[in-house]
Length: 259
Image (cartoon, rainbow, N blue to C red; front, side, top):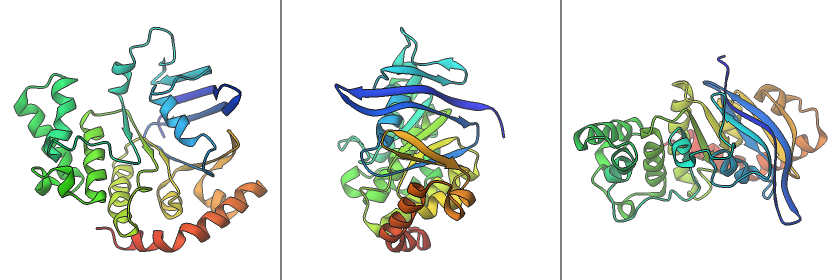
């Protein structure tokens, strides 16, 4: 596997006296899919927001392709062009079609000519299986289709890494599979991904490495066969048992019938 695209070095984030996480360190190598799991409120989503510079860390450094992006004076907007971010709730522009949602960043941020932006946007919609919905508005799409448009929008910028913040949590169970299928395809294509999710089947099948976070720290990390087969930490074992019981049934339906 190639070297690291993302390096997180001893970062800490707190709000007042509340420490969200402390001294978190990890790397994501090129072409690697890393899945972050853990109970709610343990800092997983905040970690992604810090990596994308939507939230500033209080201490520590983050490097993208060897460049410190947490350094003073960093052009945050320029950095975000290289980091794709997919949120829980899609965040599409409701007054724009799927096509325009995807190509708006290409035209306004990258300055692409209209025809080039159109071709790129259509290619990304095709990539997520929605070329035939290019002219539809978000209100005319299912939740799963809206999330796939959001993925296409992020992919259109040709990011070095994709961040997914619980991308299926706002979806009905029957729509989860279609989003996970797109993410599986991206992993097979070699896209570098850092994913926060409760979808244990996806984590087991697709992840190169799984990170278990709790209480603002990394408790354990390792390949899926170790994390699911023989986790070393008792709290990891307890969490995985509970989360599999809670999510296993509807996840199995979504994974078995991707729409």
